Amino acid sequence: MRNIRIALATALFVAASGAAAQAPNDAQIASIVVTANTVDIDAGKLAESKTSNAEVKAFAQRMVADHTGVNKSAVDLVTKLKVTPQDNPTSQSLKTGGEQNLANLKGLSGAAFDNAYIAHEVAYHQQVLDAVDKTLIPSAKNEELKALLVKVRPAFVAHLDHAKMIQANLTKKS
Image 1 (spheres, rainbow, N blue to C red):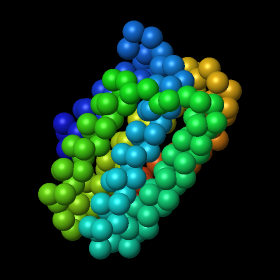
Image 2 (image 1 turned 90 degrees about the horizontal axis):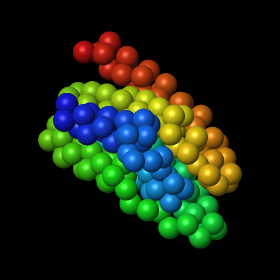
Image 3 (image 1 turned 90 degrees about the vertical axis):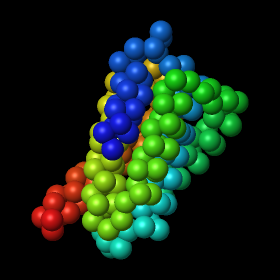
């Protein structure tokens, strides 16, 4: 779990800090957005199938639905703009981190699964919000792309708050 958090933190730190040679361009931002959402969709689908906790299952279903919607909006926009998402170190690192998270979660069950899934969701949404605020929105050149990022930001905040609430509830039950 620690390695997954380090990989995720590194990917989003690169995006948020501009540690790459330059700020991401719109095609790279599109790839980061789609990849970040896909990572959470995949984790949500796994959680839907593995958890027996109704609260965790409902949260996972919400993640799949909401992030699928954001990805549809992003794909529709880049198609309209004739922008091809461009793979980049941040999107690659997000994908790798997502794969590591899934591998870790697949080996867990019961309360251990629920706690690990929700802990990852808290950390992931916080780091995505940081990247959205510090890099993706400021770096977006296309106003429609920037507007999409601004529009979906409150959903990420709500997801983070919801995950924190579930995490607190799981801690009380332990």
